[in-house]
Image 1 (cartoon, one colour):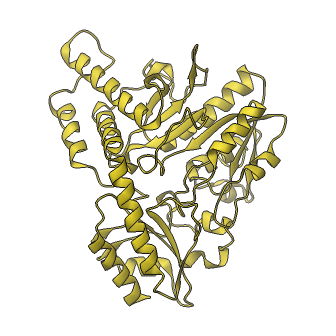
Image 2 (cartoon, rainbow, N blue to C red):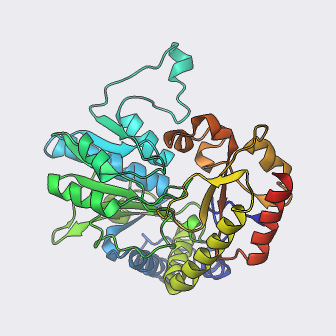
Length: 397
């Protein structure tokens, strides 16, 4: 089977695995303990990893907080910032995001907006209708363009006097659309609004500098850059006084500067650090590889009359290709099952498995949502793999 579901997760790099193993075998100390060598070695390993992740993002080491993944980072940043500003700051309580965000952002904002309390939203079945509660916040979900772009104009039109934060994904995880988040960040600065971006799909694929781009907060995960699952990072901008206060998400001990209580998963953190180091080291080579294979794939798809791209524009991250199969009896779920012994494909985000893609609906393809397939490439994908993929698609479509 050839793997084409890399936006869901990537394989672990062999160098990453080798770096992690000592911290599962010999160096098992708690980095929050003191004085003895195993604790000191663990602490040093964590700080070295933090430095590598910071360099990949263009941040300072002290601005990186380790979490369990981008979903936790996004929850921590949005809930933490909104809580602190609402109850300890100037009282602003409004957040703006887009309808095409990852579920981590979308459902966090819906939670603050009083629309749900669980990710599968059982309020409908429990009470007979959709119950709304007042949590003291409000959220606006702006529409995207027909290619999934979050425009500065749409965001600007949604700003209100009580707007505290704007959250916009850099590269969409389903259709690869890249939005001009730097311009949105500049807009935020103009109005005294904090800006957060989900960088999960962009990290390791494009050059990033969160300082230059004007970000206040950002989220990412290790397992999208050939690192382990279960570890991610939150970027929190600092100034001459340190990180601006934000409410902790995990209350407990004083780990991670008091922002996230709990014993650190040293082996995962080391793996993340190594993955970040490799991503920075091999950035040009990997970017060139993804661009070349992306061009090969798009050219090959152009020879199949029934197939088109959901985002045919240049505003797309190479390596994420979402296709629409314009065939009357085609069903993406049945097709993916049929070819699953040969290819690993997806209909969209793994976090939305089992339900129609809201991203595809948001770009005006609601009636064709069952005809969309997502193909995502990694640094190990070969031209031969691509030819097999194209052959299977042509044969079956």
